[in-house]
Length: 147
Image 1 (cartoon, rainbow, N blue to C red):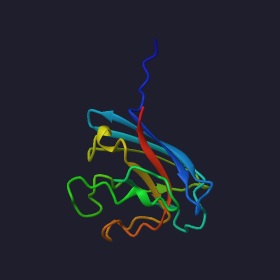
Image 2 (cartoon, rainbow, N blue to C red; image 1 turned 60 degrees about the vertical axis):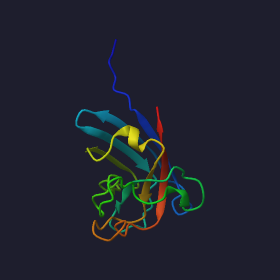
Image 3 (tube, one colour; image 1 turned 45 degrees about the vertical axis):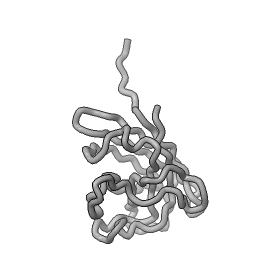
Image 4 (spheres, rainbow, N blue to C red; image 1 turned 90 degrees about the vertical axis):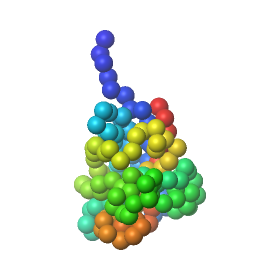
C-alpha cells in the first residue's frame, strides 16, 4: 500500500471582478517543523508590471461579496507589525499568469487557520507599510477548509 501525504486543509481560490480568470488551490500540511503550504494559481492579471502578487492569510471567514469584504485584515494572533503577522506569506511570482509556491511556516498551525481566508492582492507587498504592505486590492480569495 502506497503511503501518501494528504493535506489537512485546502482553499479553493476564485477571482474577483478585477481578475475573473484567477483560480487555483492551496493545500495546508501540518509537519513537525510547521505548516507546509503549497499554492498553485492560474489567471493572474497581466497589468501588474512587477509580476509579484502579495498573498496573506486573512482573519475573516468568507470570500463572499464584491471585493471580498468579509476577509478582514491579516491573520495576526500576536498583534505584531507587518510583515511579522502570522498570516504574512511570501509573494506569488507570475509566469504567463500562473504561479506556484511552496513555503514552510512556523507562524501558525493548520488548525488555527481553518475557517479563515487566503487572499491574493493585485500588487506586490512592500513589507513595510502598515498594516498590510500596500498590497493593493483583493483579487483572489479562498476559504480555508478542513479536509
